[in-house]
Each structure stands twice: as structure tokens, then as C-alpha cells.
Image (cartoon, rainbow, N blue to C red):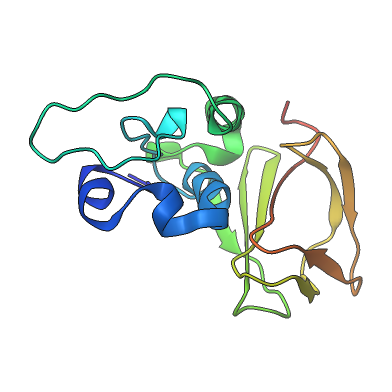
Length: 170
């Protein structure tokens, strides 16, 4: 199980917003692209920004907010992309080297001709870097076409992430 929050985290350590701030969407996207199954904790889908009472009945406000469409899109990707398959016929996983290993997380998932590349700036500052990956991709979250070329610098803003897919993924 991959998660950014659960009952213990929410009650004892704080809400996603309290603990992760601007990094919350980047971390959420990571839970859907890593090997494993993403967990959505009660109220997370509604951007709930309150700590639930532990071992007591509490209410969850059910108003769709910013994270709802992100979860819909990530869920559709998880369900449709062979590159994110798990279990006995799991998709492959490979780390991708960058020139900023201390701030940039990059990996590749692949299966049966489908490929997904996750690249994220895991820091509070903009980072310019090279990546050991080439190819033409689509940014899954925005639909923008992106080409990565050898020895060409990339730049990501603080906590910015990219989910890049090949043409086989809708």
C-alpha cells in the first residue's frame, strides 16, 4: 500500500496539508506511479484539512475540491496503463539517473510496449538538471507533448512533477 495519509498520520502527525504543504500533489502522484496499490484515506479525496478524532465518530465534509480531479485522472491512469500493472505479471521498474540525484526523483515503469516516466523535484527550490533518458512523451496530467533530448537541461519548479507516457497510453 502506498499512501500519503492514514488514520494514524492524520490523527497524530497532522493533515496532508500540515505535513506536506506544497508537496502534497507530488507525493500523491508518486503513490499512483510506484509499484504497489495507492490508498486514499477518508476525506483525502475532499481535500479535508482537519484531523479526525481517533477512536471517535467524526464527520468528513464531502465537498469536491482541488484534489478530486487529480485523483480521477490518476485513478484512470492506474487502471488503464499496463506500465503500472502489479501482481504476478508486474510492470518493470527502473530508476533513472539525473545530475541532481539529491533533489530529483526519476524512474521508469514499462510493460508490453507501454512506458511511463515519473520525474519530480522533491525540493523547495527550482532545479536545473540533466537526465539519462531520451524520447518523445505526453505529459499525462496536461496533455502537453514533451521531448527529452540527451545533454539538454530540464528544469522543474519546487515540488513540480511530470508523469510522461508514450503514445500507447490514453
